[in-house]
Amino acid sequence: MRTKIHFLLVTITASAWLVGTAMGQVDAASLKASAEAGSTEATLNREIVLSDLPTKSAAEASIPGRFSSMRPQSGLSDAEYAAAKLRAAQLKSTSAASINLKAPSILRSAANSPSAAAAFQGIDESCSFVTPSDMAVAVGPTYELQVVNDCMAVFNRSGVLQAGFPKSLNTFFGLPANNFSTGRFTSDPRAFYDNVSGRYVLVLLFEDFLNSRGFAEIAASKTNDPRGAWSTYQIQVGGAGQCPDFPALGHGRSGDKFVGSVAVGFNLFGCNTSGFTSFLDDQIWFLPKAALYAGTGFGFNFAFNLNVGGTHVDTIQPANVAFGNEEPRTQFGVNSFNINFGGFQCSSGCNGLVVWSFSNVLQNAGSPGMAISGSVVGTPSNYSLPPAASQPGGRNTIDTGDTRMSGSVQYKAGFLYGTLNTNNGGGGSAILAYQIHAYLNDNGNGTCTGAFLNACPTLAGVGIDNEFSYDVGGGTGLNAYFGTIQPDAERNITMVFSFSGDNFFPSVAYTSNRATQAPGHWHDAGVFLCNGQAFYRQGRWGDYTGTSIEVTSPGKMWFSGMFSEANGNWGTCIGKNGYVASNQP
Image: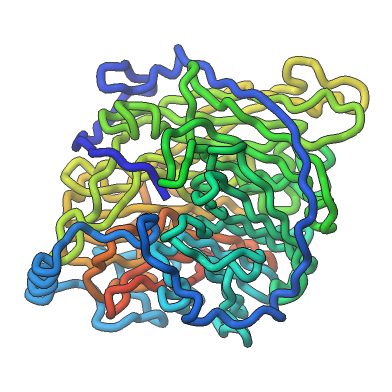
């Protein structure tokens, strides 16, 4: 979910490395990022065998009510909707007549991105009963876990749904069925597969507006088979009258006594029986992997009061360290400027990202505590609040959110990869993607000594090595939004994203770059994974796409996204690609 304000259309402009403040942009040289640290306790809620749970049924459908942000409307009346459908039928759409998963169609131009070696449909709205999807995909050696709002499923890597799936997330976590009329519901799932420890991790929120509070629901599998036993935890976020929103999920190197954590972030809002009120803070929790995977209680540290120049930031995405041979020495995080910046949600334009380092995050005997540092780095281009995306028969009818980094951030070989949505300069949305290089010193402020010597590095510098845009200048005809990047072992990358426009119903697409690709742009326009089929009326679109690396073949990158089905509801599809030959440019 997101807070929304009315937006102004602001043209994207190229800018110098650092820019002035005339348009509400960030002068990186004059701002300092800071945060504070605390600690708390967590206890095991219960253990559950996933395959023992019943299959998700239609009886668990949500009850509509005043808490309808999960099932919004586009603002069209029945008559307007009928007229839009007629216009859409009269337009020649370049989308395929049926979903083509075996021979994906080229997106707008000849593409050299590796085609999907696997492609299949995942969970759709008939399973979830809520809008939007908000999804994650986590790929292990044999099975893939896909999670959307209030529903989860396990597939094998050929796309075969496993017996007894899908399952209800509410049942899995022992929660009451979603009831929007009383303001009690689950939302915003995230997941990853830890290929070092062989565990799946799942996080989502349980909002209890009825009692003016909210919880993080956290689960870790006992083995590398997600159909088996899991440990689950429920932890209240904030205090009375405070509720979490928009979780973020990352993790550090397994087995590392200083940074071997599952990092869970939240935006914290005031709340009451009517829902969210004002934005308060962003928090990052650092849960010890060893205890989480063992299913025991644990204490954990967390960061709060995350701010730049005294102004609270939001939606810090902790980075994922997916490869077993990587040791970055800290838990990195990245955020863009959003809620409190640029006339709020960057409606008047923003520039810059904030890179964070959280080192020595775990609780150990004798520890001096976390070392937290942050650095603001200017972005080559400005960004601003995007208009809603277009589709045939409906200009600006698909919600594209705001300028936060909504998808997960990945770490690979000293680089961080993330994206954000922005105004494309012509009445539509576009994506700006970043390859960020962060540098650490040896021992931070020197508080780590003895057994903790050099365990507390802080940031020594940050640079943006590559900014590459997608559909800037696309107007209402070419709209891209909610991209997520997955690097492979060589630092080749694939970005999955949502795509629509005046002649394109909302689709899932992907594009790829070699590590040796020249900076500044994508190699090609990309490929459709699933073509949108019909006018999407519900307006509210999934806030993020999902990616995962294949553990048994580090050159294979998995991805998932949301598209409009023939009945106008949302569906999802899952695919993978990778560079396998030297003659793939």
